Image 1 (tube, rainbow, N blue to C red):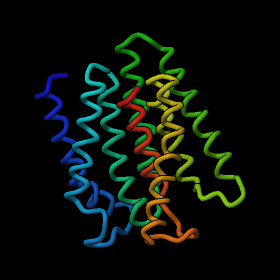
Image 2: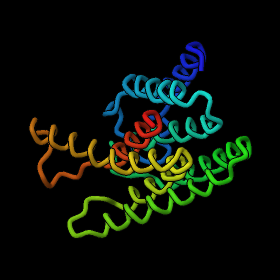
Image 3: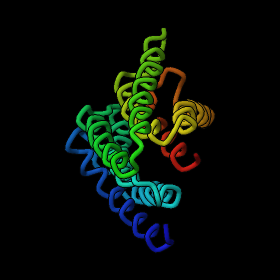
Image 4: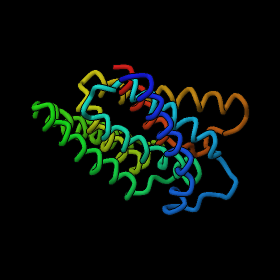
Length: 209
């Protein structure tokens, strides 16, 4: 994809980040003036969209990935502020992303990729559900449902992307928690949102594989 188009998509991502907080308020009570800041989210949105455009510019699944990314920005807001991943937003990731991937499959003429996408969603759901059922697990079933929804696009991109997308959230969350513990922002028993790590891991897997 040309630099001009990547820039245009990045600007679209900035707009998606800017409106993520007011959209999030439609689903949860987001504290006024509290984190995350709209300017920071606009920057994150630009990086997320621009990265996808640069890495997947020729992929017919790009529109579906951008829809998922836009919804993911809102989910990050709701989880960071209220520790909630609302079902309607997770459903939009699953249904909207699934329909977009079905269209991409029709464009490529490779139905096997859609089969792998469904398998990826199932594999992600089972893996995260088992982790959530472990004693003292901090995963909620909102995290499980989000991981399953993101398993669709990761599976469509291939098994390497799926494996990386399942591994990276735990690495990212672990690093963040260690840093927060080190600076005294959280204690060992403080609830920490895991949704942003799931979303960030999926994004990294999409742009790196």
